[in-house]
Length: 393
Ligand code: MN
Image (cartoon, rainbow, N blue to C red; front, top):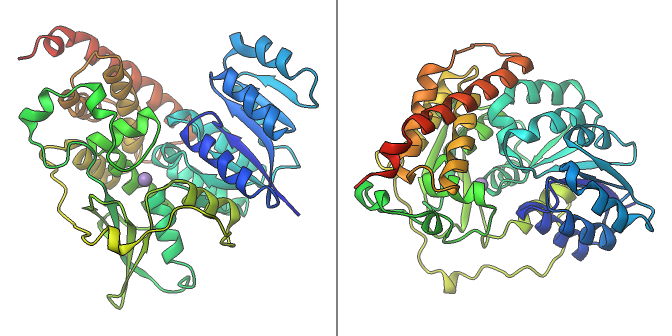
């Protein structure tokens, strides 16, 4: 029996790599649903190749194009973001890979969990924003969440066979991004082109900027807290520039387990889709001789303030992680539009953390509202400071 997969965000980096995995393991998987935000051309190409039962194009202006190109195929075409929440409930789906960007992943993930689908979670923002709601729903509907994020996949792999053994702590590894070792005065001069060059991982624009600012690792701490039911003080971050050790678990006897491999997202994607099986593949293998030195260093939270802000949000709890996520999505977007310098992004996030109303026990509605209010505030801060931002020495 083939596993039937829905890929939400199939035209993004993770979505495309998931389809590569499926193409290489075609006797194991079948594509049931593909969804894309905007990239109609690629969605059409993927649909013609993988023949899913249905596709969703979120951008309404692209519907006619997708519909006409797929009209001779037995593929249903739906339009609009809300349609994703419908298609993920199809009886035929076994597992939903959530690979869309940011807060937009929240509602479709909730719909998939409520429909009892296994989740291969690539959209970390879902857990960052509303980890309590997602984990409670998953327990209620007896749904498994398999992490796709490489660090969390590493921890998940280290925990196999250890289900009764308490975790003392976990250590998330961070590459440090393209600006590792740099000081603030260097960062003042960097451009979006510099920030989009990641040394080890090939990823989408949003997560690449998050990696350069270390916000990605901050979000991953919060993601790990929810996935593995940990307390904030059990989660550490270490910079490991070679990205070979993907993360580490330390058990109560002091023993540590780490998962290693070359940095290639196809491995955690395949592991999440095929769990509990390990499938044979021909991905490039790691060789110690080519990497004789694996090094580790403390993250510099004075230069990379986002990591510290995310940690504060994790400790504070409530809607604070939702606030940092929304503010961060805005500043990354405006940074990519050249409207804010790289080093000013944490200032906007910090101001939002101070000014948006704190809620200790938020409902889903509170999260939706917090997200909206924070985005408006972050945009306003950027707009008010535009002159200051653009005329820096
Ligand atoms: Mn990661």
